[in-house]
Image: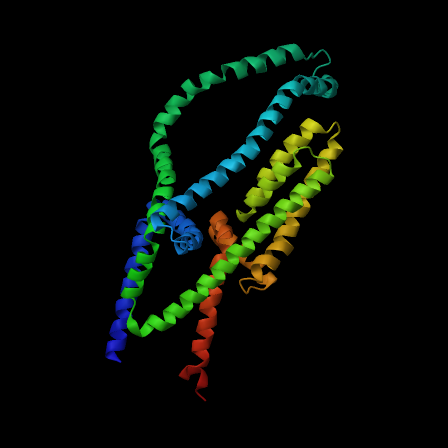
Length: 352
């Protein structure tokens, strides 16, 4: 009993020190945590390449190059859209100024001053001069950049650290796992490995389910935006669907791009409302039906539990809580299952 209590005190002390270190180092852990998550996601692809007799280092480089290629493809999809929309904006901008003058000037004359005039040409010239002088903004931004230079450099270092840390984690993944396994207390070894295997299966199901959600929502946005007549339905739908893994970001980015495209394309504002309706319905379908169905069921969570987890973790931890709500809930579910099993076999439960 004394040895058992001493061991418990040792482990509690170790956990307290580890949590204290995590708290003290939290400001520098972000790139390493992000790299660890990406490495966990990409490790099965590296393992598959290794099973084909590809050297592990080469396999890691191939997987990371594939991720960069995917990012490049997304940029190539988006850049023509943005370029064409900006050109349309510059063409239609003078007409918008004149339309605003025709609608707003009578109201201003009625409420402010009957003799008030609106010189559209002067306003156009002023805005064009500001656009031409945008380069001068750099000089105005220099003092701000000087005062915020440290923070900017820190962000840039964090961004650059992610692929570096990811490379080394992927390359040495098996060695790191073996080191952790060797350090594990032998009398806990079998049970801990059982729990970790179950966690790995559940997180793999979560990733597959999330990928299914992304593909399904990409198809939904592309098809429905095309059905309402939006010219750039395919690239906007793909981007909006692929970004749904970050809660609300896919809807916000897609809605912004679709609204700009609709304003450039449609002559009447009521057509823009159809585009807004598509994204409103898409947000409801994704949050209330698709994610609980494709993700919640895969990880063993009831649809109501998925909705509750998103709300609860979002309330506790903000945006990152929403982002990690489902995988964390799956981990807690595994812990709860094993905790219940332990409780049902304990003396406390069986005692009369």
